[in-house]
Image (tube, rainbow, N blue to C red; front, side, top):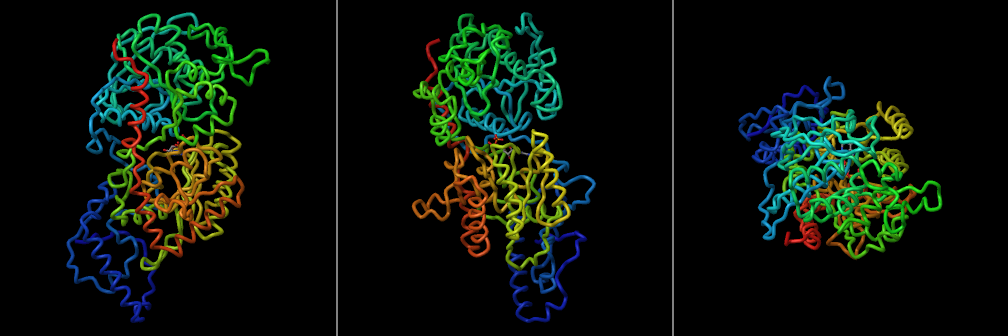
Length: 608
Ligand code: ADP
């Protein structure tokens, strides 16, 4: 059985090349390999029904030289995309993204608990960056291990309600804000198999077309949200073992818990704070903290929540993140190397050193059900470490869809590596290195696609200029938007995933890229240093899985790209082995959620 294309894409094979007997023999061999590969039922199954495939029975012996004339489009009756398509290929009609089933057989924990996450983000319904992925991945992993888990999330107006199952209004209650009580709806629903409680105040908070950046006061909205979550636990008589808060947005919750709700009715919960990025401090004036019912002035001390940088200024400010660090029972940051970095630099280092005994570094995992190239509904073809044929289709699909050169003869070696960079376009991510990579990859004869959103208008305009400059060429594409679907396709298409961050608490892009068979090129910092090990480092060959550079100048990055490109072109066998190896690395939550469970167990109280 083979797949036949109905593509009208003209073949680029010159007719007279078949006059050459060596070439004809080579083509015949290649055709037989194709036949074998395409017979593989995996390949058939691997091509999603979303991409309109027609499979035809064909006698294998009919394969002859003419068969070899086919271009790469012969991978199936795949409808190949083109840049002129009315609807871009990543906006197709995909099945709704539900990955609620348990991914693998996970052993249940024996000592079960109730964990409530209080968070500003949750993938895929309210995701801006890694925070959303982490909450969903960790919550699912703990559920799979048998724990009871709920996620408390603001009911942002921008959430697509179609992605929420069993959504229902369960109550209306009042929560305090700025001297009065705000009527608040509470909804329940299920997202990717995880129970979610949506907090929906009747005021202007959380209205707008994006998770962040609405026209309301963000800091005050999250102060309200933090208290509203505790208020709901009290109203509903719920006493979880652990309240797990994330980032500055929920940094006031530990203060509210220990100085207010613990004296009221909530006795059992203990608080764990995860810091995903130390650069966002939650700067807060004392009178703003007053609005959630606390006395802001009592926190304006060095031991509590004063922002150390403002000491001696008038007025001094508070930091919700610092308050969260002081008042939580345990603090986690998202990689062991970032933990060390944060103890050595930054104004919070002193506070973290004082609380060192409750501060842990746990590497993030990735949700391997959400990020699985063997089942990913967004991919034109599926693949795994043992069969990467589908990855070639994904590369070709993206190349054609974006108008990148893809006219290589199918029997020629692919010497044009595709470099992909999927990132928020902010200074942390190494903007000057990303723009340098665009130039250098083109110079090296490779291709590069950037998918990113720039919150800063100036950065956005710089990248827009670059995007326009390259839009007519055939090797660089810069797509300034957020698209979950396209990100999946790009990881699948990529030969190399580039993460040149100046600092990176953990970084998910390199881990996701590896799962999709893209070899990482990263700067050695934070979680990148914990997950990527250089291929040329002879001291740890068993760990080697990518290309690492240390400096922050363009030359350092260029050196790593040079090495990656020469492996790709000159050592194809080693490259293939690297692709297989990175796909087999277990960066799943199954691997690291256990460390969170240990932290939860170390602070929980059992006899309430
Ligand atoms: P950060 O949390 O600092 O943004 P991470 O690497 O931890 O960085 O996580 C980034 C996540 O956001 C990854 O899942 C990445 O694929 C995704 N992402 C970043 N930018 C985009 C974009 N423009 N479109 C789609 N996904 C994106």
